[in-house]
Image 1 (cartoon, rainbow, N blue to C red):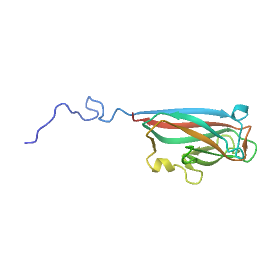
Image 2 (image 1 turned 180 degrees about the horizontal axis):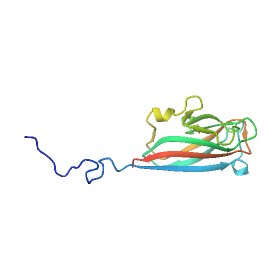
Image 3 (image 1 turned 135 degrees about the vertical axis):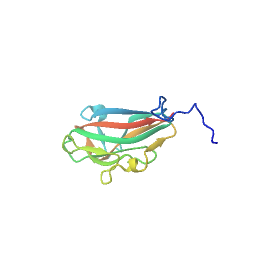
Image 4 (image 1 turned 30 degrees about the vertical axis):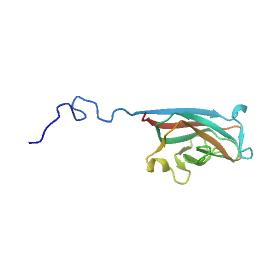
Length: 151
């Protein structure tokens, strides 16, 4: 006869699910490029940190929402400096109509990191913004990062 373990309960049977340790959370940040602190240009190869990420964090999705159009042809990349600079968003048009939303992956192939199961930060790092083309002097963009804490 098979033995039973009375200490183990199935999820929903009065106990937490076995993998209830992880916590999902969202970080967001609005960058107003009309503030001279955030002025950037592709010619200057400008990069700015958007989010500080601690170790053992799983990035599930990255979103960029244009709040105010730049006013001139400009694109951005979101990724990892010293690695894949456009890993999360590639070539998002910041001169797009307000309300335009870009998701993880390239502009042509959205949701690339979701299909890959997300991006695991094994050590502390930053998610960085790169001015890919043009200049960023007038636009306003909201950046949203969806994480699962696995520490």
